[in-house]
Image (cartoon, rainbow, N blue to C red; front, side, top):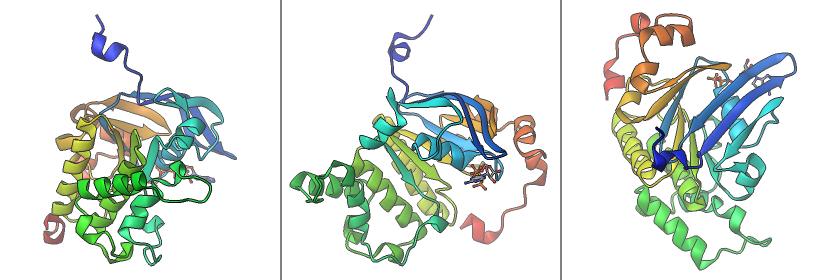
Length: 260
Ligand SMILES: Nc1ncnc2c1ncn2[C@@H]1O[C@H](COP(=O)(O)OP(=O)(O)OP(=O)(O)O)[C@@H](O)[C@H]1O
């Protein structure tokens, strides 16, 4: 018998039969998955498995060869127009020298709501103040974005998503180059957002911490190999499927620097 609380809930993300080809390369092949609101879902797969393409598809930045993506019941173009999806980029995809403050980064989340002249309203300022407070960056609001630590930079982009009012946050490798303490701060923040109904998708190679905070995990290799609890998804036989090797056997010992 379906749970009436969840049976009627519109999924935060509903992907059905999604295939994306770049010329002769099939990046995604008949991917179907559903994520309910308020869930944290880890996306795991080797390089080239299609994680970025999946994120781009959710943002409406690549055209599906076939299939469809629905966000909170809306098409990707409508979801984009309504600011329902926010993306926290990989560190290397950002020009950290760009002369923009932490506050201005968060304010970019409001652009979709502003008029033609981008006049900032009191409401925009309130939303940005609240978002910066939520991620703990109020004191650093006027600092140039490149003069933050790796973890603080991630939080600035999460603030952008909060200010935007996004239903879904997509985080691309949020823990890469981030120390364990900052990682824990980001995880606390994401857990808090999820508890308030936001949905979080994280692509990560950091498999060890995933079960401590993710509700579910997807193993991707052009297709969805497994979509289950993190504990199930990360079973050695599943990882062997996704990575082609038994990564539990091959995992290198941690160095002191990594333990930090
Ligand atoms: N614009 C493009 N044109 C042609 N092929 C592409 C393009 N973007 C990605 N691909 C190919 O599609 C496949 C999936 O790439 P994608 O970037 O989605 O993988 P990924 O899982 O995000 O990889 P990584 O972990 O290395 O970031 C790869 O074979 C890649 O070479």
